[in-house]
Image (cartoon, rainbow, N blue to C red; front, side, top):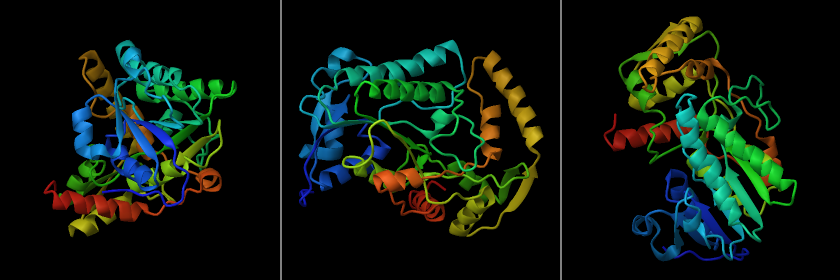
Length: 337
């Protein structure tokens, strides 16, 4: 496909992590708007299979400073998507692994950013940890705990400090990004349970949650090329949250099945997860579920996205209900469920 500039000012843009799930939606939008895109990649052949000659390619790795030399030459805007994510528990070894990519890797990229107009860091609401505010805003107190959460927050703090000295940084905090072609299959476990007619509901609350459909997130990122304020942080998610049982009902409707809600006391799951977590740590293995997982599940996660709407022009188009339907239909088409 040949993309044309429809009167917009063309920018030279570097994207790290552009060949991943988010990049597969985001990079085509940049090209469609006439921007010149350079991708930082480890495998140029594989990247070209995805984007062909529409992009420039710089072969390098964020953990190897020498390989990054020149990656930001003549670049106006940098989108830094590369990160190691996961739910590994806090251990010295895990922190070292996550910091090597998330913190040191970001520092290495920043050192190459001379004369750029914007550095847009893709963080995560995970960097906030468990937040009890309702709704959650960019000003809510952050209490990260897991290595992924802590290292994402450390980079945020690094960027905020650099912005005080003129660095053109902007921080973006999406909630979980999901959608068609997602490798993590965010709704697969839930869909399999619903298909069996079983649905476990932990605690007495509504368990509201809010994820962002990948096309909406890509749209928000593209808007940041021209919008957004230096030094600011923006939460990006869906317009409205959805409660846990409603999520199950949407899945059941798409699968054409009925399901029964089995309620499990929150205290029981917290105790069970705590014991399981300690046993797995002693065995040197990753726990199946942790106490923090349970606490996140029973907590309502409702976000205020008014700042992103006002300053970026963000307009989410895919509701949680429609997004879940799209994903379940994709699972069915691929024979995954």
